[in-house]
Structure formats: structure tokens, C-alpha cells
Image (cartoon, rainbow, N blue to C red; front, side, top):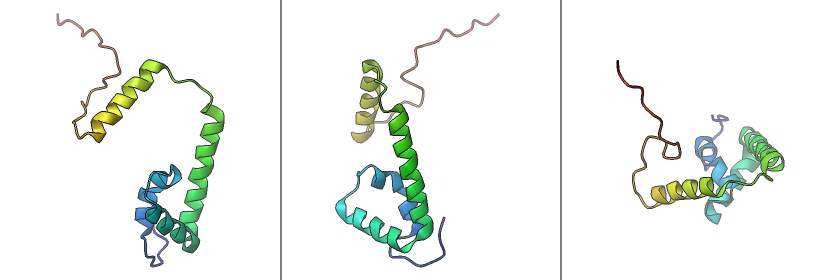
Length: 104
């Protein structure tokens, strides 16, 4: 998506990293660039506002559910594998093994 106007930071870069901005997971210098972009670009500001509203709604509606300890451990383990550069298995490591049907 692009509004068609030239910006110092391209619309596609802003939208590709929107959740990092929303979750405060980017350096302050990048946050400043994004804030400046939102001041200049109405379509991106609108998208930002929509995603921010969805995030607040999900938090309000689902933020009180307790996450099972074993699920949290598995997810955190996967995140650590990715961060440390290890390859992550393509199959779902959280699923329990299922019996395979025997051939006749």
C-alpha cells in the first residue's frame, strides 16, 4: 500500500513493521520516523489507528485468560530457538503424536 506521496520513510516499510511499532519493539529512532510518517500520511495513520483499536479490543476481551504453563513453555522455547538461530521443525512440535493408519 502506498498513498502515492513521497515520504522519507516508505509506506510499505511502515506497514511491514507496524506491529513492532505498536508493541514498542523497535528502537526509538525508528519510532520517531514512524511517528513523523503518520503525521504526513493519512492512509497509514488510519491503518495504525485500526490496528491499535483491534489490539485494544483483543486485550480487553481476551487479556484475562490464563495461559496454560506447558503451552507458555513450548511457545517460549520456540521463540528462543528462533532467536538463537536454530532451525525450527516444520511439523507442529506442540501436537501430540497421532497413530498412523496401518496399510491393508
